[in-house]
Length: 479
Image (cartoon, rainbow, N blue to C red):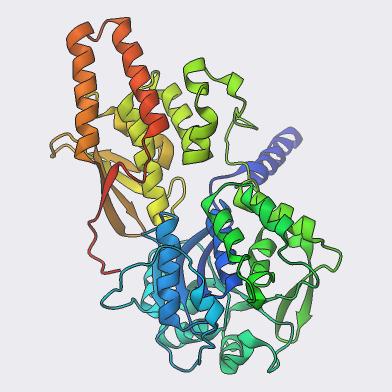
């Protein structure tokens, strides 16, 4: 019995260390008033595997909510998260400052006006109705949106685990995020929702050319967005760290001291935390290095010498172009599939594109594939399974039996569905190559498989997942 208890104790300890490492710590809805620091906080959260942003709402503060909506959509489109839900507050109580430098800051390529901006309340209600995870509400501006949700949505109090609110240290007129809507904080405190107040003051820490240079070294789009936002002259918050402290707290709570500030917990950056330490933390978040997402390997092979010569030749630039996640999934798929094939490669790119579109994670989407059960189209299925985690074992993928075989699949996330298909010009190119190799050499010839391998490597290295697919929103929702 004592031995049995010891085994159970060890198993519990092991599970504590490594259970579901692909599952993020936080599922969040973020409300922003679109200041410089809000952009950087969003970039950090979008880059992190430990935070899953379910939706973003905009409220009036630094900018008005409508202007903020288009800035957030521009950012998400640039980062290829077009399907992440965005809504704007329709509350007219808060009067925006409409800060000109913040208005002028480009969050991404301008998006076309929509007939009707989705309301923040509608978006929050939809998300809370379609997720089973405990949700954290992150307020980067006033608490107006949270207060409005409490007034109009019965789900908000039931489903929100806590509110993380960024503001100045005291509830005074000089506290911008508090003074925008002084009533909402007291309204929220009357309900059963924990409010964690993150004091945005950081002392002398800020963005120098050295800091922005280090951030840029990570090479990711969120990092470059962060760095570029610090280069605006004569803008007070261009070089000030404030709202970014929320993602820092979520990843590195040891950098903060906790105290009880009247009605709620308050977190303040420790006075001995240096700008260098903050920069290092930023780089870890932006590089996805705060958690190990592997299951067996402590470190995935990154040295080019671990790969065959034809693969390693363009390894560095391929990772720079398409990211480490795609490289890793392509490698695992090739080993699972037992050869390098074009449709298996395309399946990986399709799966990652679907994840990016929704800002979803591994094992969070269900898939219906139209690639059938026969090669070469069916090879697509292996790539999709590896890149999304929607595997046969998890029961998250089905092969449609009542549809003509084609390199396409439906991806469903939080009750929303898209269809992704390979563009016709790319499909024709694959067909021509495979048919030509088969006509000349036949499937049982080693030369055939060597040529297929070469073609698959070219596809892997040269085809951009953001260019080769058509994406159609096939759900019933209007947002």
